[in-house]
Image: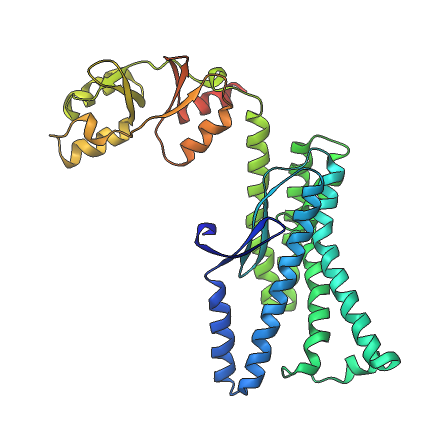
Length: 360
Ligand SMILES: [Zn+2]
C-alpha cells in the first residue's frame, strides 16, 4: 500500500510522498458537494480546507522527523495517507526520554498552529474574537470560517493523536514513560494492553451514544495496536543474535537436474522441508521447499528442480544478524543459506525459527 505513494517534494532532505487514494478524498468532496447542490465556491473552499489540513498533518510529521534527527535518528520519508500521515523513522531512539520528545513534538506542532491562528484572529478582531467565533455560520463553507475551522481541527488532531494507544503518538508517549521504569519490551506490552482497553471503552461509548465514527476509530486503533508489540517483541528476541547461532545443518541437498518425481521420493524420506540446491559441480544455485515440489509434481511431473527452484539463493554470512533472515522469510523465500567463508554451514527456514522460539 505504501509503495503506491507519489513523491511530491523533498523538504529538509526528507521526501514527502502522497498516496494516490488521496485523490479519492477530493473526488468525494466534489461529488458530495454537487449532490448537495452546493455552490462551486463552497466546494472550492472545502478543497482548499482539505489541502490546508493535510499541510498541517505534514507539519505534524516534520515535528516528529526533525526532533528525531536531533537525536541522530533519520527519517526514510513522510507519507500522506487518507487516514493521516506517517513519518517512517529508521529506528527507535535509544533513550525513552528521546522517544517521548519525538512523539510529543507532532501534537505540539498542531497546538502551535492553533495558537498562531488564534493570535491572527485576535489581531484582526481584537476583543470581539470570541463573539466572531460564536456567530459565524459553520453550516456552510465560507472564507469566514476557514481559519476558525482550521484552528479547531488542529486542536482535534492534537487530542486525537494523544489517545494513549498505538499507533497514535499517545501510545508512544505512554511506552516512553513506562520504559523509564521497565524494559522496552515490557513497556510496549503494557502500552499495548492499556491502549486496547481504551479502544474497548471507545467502542462501548460509541455504541451507547450511537457515534459510529467513534466505534470505527476504536476498532481501527485496536487492530493496529498489537502490530507494534509483535514488531518490538521480534526485534528484542533476535537482537544481537547471529545467523550462525540460529541455523541448522543444511542436511539433504538436491541437485538441479533431478526430476520432480525423484526429488519427491528423496524429500519424503528426508523428513526435511527446505533444501539447498546445487549444480553438477557442487556449486549452490538455489533453494526449494517441499511444498514447491509437491505443487509442481501435481501440475507437471516432467519438470526438474532447476525449473522450479528459488534462484539466486538468499545468502547470509554466519556473523550477520538473524533479523535479515526473517525479513527474507517474510518475502516467501523458502530458506536462507548461511555461509562461513566459501563453505555452506547451515540453513535457516521457518522450522529453525520455530524451534529456536520453542527452545527460548
Ligand atoms: Zn504523530
